Structure formats: C-alpha cells, structure tokens
Length: 204
Ligand SMILES: Nc1ncnc2c1ncn2[C@@H]1O[C@H](COP(=O)(O)OP(=O)(O)OP(=O)(O)O)[C@@H](O)[C@H]1O
Image (cartoon, protein in one colour):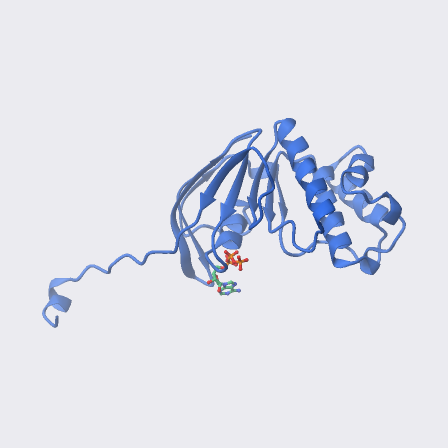
C-alpha cells in the first residue's frame, strides 16, 4: 500500500508549522522523519494518519491501512499485558497475540497489569500492539523513547520483519535504527512574504 503526500501544509493550533511537504511511502520501505524539536514531526504524522486535517495539499492512499503509535501508549492500565493485546487483536480481527508477545519479549510480563509496568515495558507493549493490527502502514512517533538498547534492537527487528512482509513505516526518530529506507529532513517553516498592495505600498 502506497501513501503519497503532495504540497502539504500542516498546522498546530491553527498556525502552519510545515508547508510544501512532499513524500512517498512505498511498500517494503521505511521513511525516517528527522528535524529539531518543535519543527512539526508529530503534527505531520498526525495529519498523515488522518487525526487532523491538512491546511492545504493532498494525501492519497492508505486511509484504512494505517496503524499509528504516538507519544501515548494507548494502554489500559487495569488489564494485563495479555488482556491488552487480546483486546486490540479482537478490535483489529487478528488471529492471535503470540507473535506480538514474542517480538517485544513480553512473555514474562504477560500476566502483569499494564499499569504496573515500567516506562520501557509499557512502551514495548504499546509497540506490540502494532503487530496485532495487521495494518500495512505503521506511523511511529519517537517509538524508542524509554527503550533500552536490547529493546531498541528488538523493535528494529520487528520493523524489519514488517517491511519484509511488504509493510511500510514512517518513523519520527532521532536515532539510527539501521533500516532500509530514506530520510526526510524537515526544515523550518518559511513564512511567505505578504504581497504589498498599492494601498500598503503607499506607507512604505
Ligand atoms: N497543543 C498545541 N497547541 C499549539 N501549538 C502546539 C501544540 N503542540 C505543539 N505545538 C507547537 O507546534 C509546533 C510543532 O510541534 P510538533 O509536536 O509537531 O513538533 P515535533 O517536531 O514533533 O517536536 P519534538 O521533536 O519536540 O517532538 C511546535 O512549535 C510546538 O510548540
């Protein structure tokens, strides 16, 4: 499944933060979003995932094929790890959760209430959710926050396997995950000069 964005302007709080964004996400490939804090990576991901409308431009493809993992893990704290994954599996119609438990090494935590997990363990559970969505396009906002080195490697392996099955991943991250793919460096929003009309020009 291919996702294309053309001449996209995205806004936060009504204020444009990025304009003229063009990108293509192809099956089997990752696209890494880079840029300094506050440049608009989260805003762009949220717009591409359909969580907010663009100010201008076009987004084509992937509508129902996107699994989004943002800063919030989307975990239900009173349910166990297994119950959380089973819940998502039932929502997305996945056949089971064994692969997801394996991929993020959650077996030993399977019966633990999610609210009692550490930050990194919660993040692993949140990422395991991607595997039970069955969705081809993963959109991930700083997915490795709180993960230790081993967990980062596990996560990178899970993304690689997803790409190997023809999936794709758009990832805002500051670290090198060693994935096959491209990098999109986001630059600062450049305000377009307001045209000076004859009337205004008289005062300049
Ligand atoms: N709720 C909000 N209301 C208004 N402006 C916001 C809001 N949240 C963020 N912003 C602003 O929107 C801009 C883009 O923020 P965004 O979160 O998309 O950046 P980012 O590149 O993901 O940053 P980071 O690397 O720090 O996560 C920033 O200037 C930020 O201050």
